[in-house]
Image (cartoon, rainbow, N blue to C red; front, top):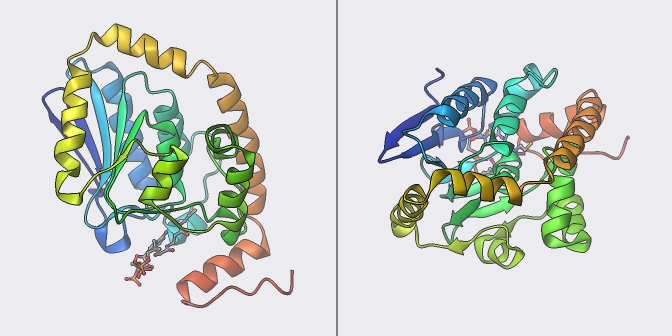
Length: 254
Ligand code: COA
């Protein structure tokens, strides 16, 4: 285990916490691998009825770790990020996101695959894929348009502006904005309420809500193909070099 994903089971609830606060919980491939393993085990563990995903410190997650991502780009659907995201999108039990701060890139995409999401008032969301010369991933091009309408999804994916928790609530991306000191208690109360319900009925309800799984999988594959082509681009190298050099990227030569 990388040590950057902490898991804890308490009262039928598995909490999976991204724990790399000095890097805003940017996710390394080893972290995806750990999270995928934990989810896989939770699928068949009768002691786990609900999963909570959250982050340490002041962030939910700043998305892919850009350095690790450049050095170890996901090669295929067996890459840790795919194992985690496929595991999450097909996870049969309820999953709640406790968004304790910044949720960027896959930090926001994850929410589209969770059944519930609660965020602190200071949470900030962004889908900056185009800024990095990338494309949306894990069916966000499908699910955002479906949830928010094409007009709003286009804005989020092409202008890629940061938005706050109240805006996320107005989009229906989260269930509620919760004061920071009440986030954990609120999420645990929802988790306990879900854990007390008949588990097979809950799973069947979730399966019905996600009956479009094939369409989602097909979109994930299409996005992944284009995403991996984009990984080879000079535009991407410029975007990521600029991030670490703490300067604005210059796309004028492309
Ligand atoms: N990958 C690697 N390192 C990251 C990171 C990422 N996605 N996000 C943040 N970090 C690192 C920073 O490099 C910095 O490291 P340092 O202290 O060694 O310089 C540290 O985390 C703190 O980040 P910083 O940028 O100083 O914090 P901030 O509060 O000013 O801004 C963010 C936070 C998340 C808005 C900003 O870090 C950011 O835009 N990160 C990139 C997000 C991104 O593009 N994700 C990938 C999507 S595919």
